[in-house]
Image (cartoon, one colour):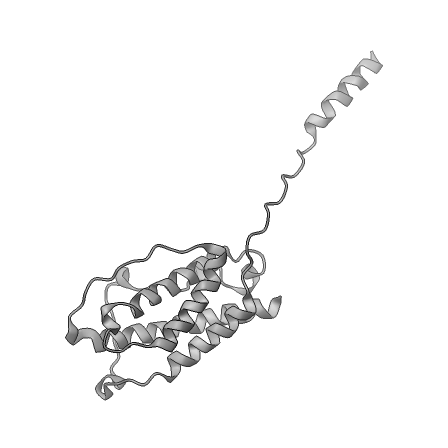
Length: 180
């Protein structure tokens, strides 16, 4: 009887062992962190050097009461902190991609028709292209037309928010480029 038990135990033992790990997926295109860091710094420099064409608006503080209309922002829940970036950066890069696409659409909208910013747009396009390599292109959103009289105010608000977004994004890319 003992040999039969041993045989059954030997036959059942493989069922108790964990199954072999699935093969790792083939790596897709990797984010070029150093290039992203360089472009985000350039974007930050370009936004910071923009001059307000309407002197009256320089001291104006704008606020928006409806948070549903706010542009994408990098939040704590986006996992852009250094410890998470080192292990899984997907959520953070998707938020950055969403923000870059939003500001690219905004710069191409009627709000900036009278004030084109070609160097800013070109740098934004380059950075967008690098991040899109890994995460694809998010859907474009067409913006509702706005009144011409509101364009200077909307430009100022958009550029202030872009500057804030770029500052945080640059920190993410600086950390990630340094860690690799």
